[in-house]
Amino acid sequence: MNRDLLRDLYAAVTAVLLVLAAVLVGIAVERTDGTLRVGWPPLYSNWLPHLGPGTPAALAVAVTVVAYGPSLAARLPWRALLIAAWGTVMAWTWSLALVDGWHRGIARRLTTRYEYLQVIDRFHDIPGTLRDFTHHILLHSSDHWPPHVAGHPPAASLTFVLLDRIGLGGGGWAGAWCITVGATACVAVLVTVRALAGERLARRAAPFLALTPAAVWMGTSADGYFAAVAAWSVALAALAVTHRAAHRARAAAFGSGLLLGLTCYLSYGLTLFALVVAGVLLLGRKRNPTGVLQVLPLLLLGFVVVPMAFTLAGFNWWEAYHLLVERYYQGAGGIRPYGYWVWANLACTVFLVGLATAAGLRRAAGTLVRQRDRLLTRPGPAGGPSAEARLALLVSAAVLALLAADLSGMSKAETERIWLPFAMWLLPACAYLTRPRAWLAAQAVLALLVNHLLLTAW
Image (cartoon, rainbow, N blue to C red):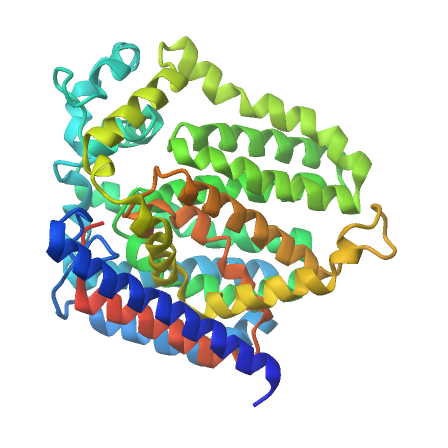
């Protein structure tokens, strides 16, 4: 066994030990004082071994991707690979969700008392509801919003209101929307990696993005949809700083800003995606300093469109955010101990991204250390960072955003759902790994065990 592979295994074992510690300490804390407010620490779930109609399909998808994923990713034409990746994520996510059955696994998820579909009827007058939105965030306010509605800007709820208006109402359509749109996040990440780090690494990352354990939660929460919007904002930024055609670069920059603005009005915490976009701009500056300066104004112009529209409609983002912080501490957020969740959240992330990503992140860190001198060189074609270093820098931007979310104290528990948008950008680190089939098998086993042993709440 070579030294690199041995170190990869050390990283995977470290991730396992982190999860084990979070489980054991979490069970002890929950039995002592019940302050964690989760059923099976560190996940918001309950122990319930079960099979379901999606089990055979999930097994079939897993075996197929492990057996053929790396070879197909290496030789398919690029556009065909993107379509295949999206289709595989769809099949994987649907089959995992259907392990719990249609009603419990998909149709009911977004209709519970915490969720967005509970308030559809309260948006009969959309402008009036937006003006009045902040008056119902706090728990003591009249007709206070359910937790997820209060915890997000109104673009999240408006999505499902608009689906209802066009005849796609109910939990089934809402679940189908989140899975279908959420699955495109995989495509956005591949487009970004290809633009910034080259097609070879994008192809190596593709099977891991398609067979991600995060699919367990992408099919059961609106955060999969949020992840896709955020991912496409990054992908368009990457195309803007790398595209040779000026008019297409400008259009991509405006689109990136537009989606980044929408991202901020889907979830307050996803404003941290500005760090990932900044990482993209930094990488673009290494390759084309003039090009970045040309597209940056259009990106900023696109970014203000959604905030301006909501502000003119009467919704005050900053006021709502400050009220949300107060509401957060009125509920479970004020009870859950920061000292446990600040590290147990990272254990939740292991469930999201798998042991392969833990090993890949180790290699990404090593790449940054080895090429630190090249990363600091002046922009230009000679002596700049390698493709591997550029990918490591992109992944590092996502790690930085995730750590900022963790340290903020506004993500105590439930991060297996909340951090889905960040998790998608850790998965490309798997492109560094040798023996991809073995690591893919580990990813699939983790997802299958979680989905069949636990009943996830999201």
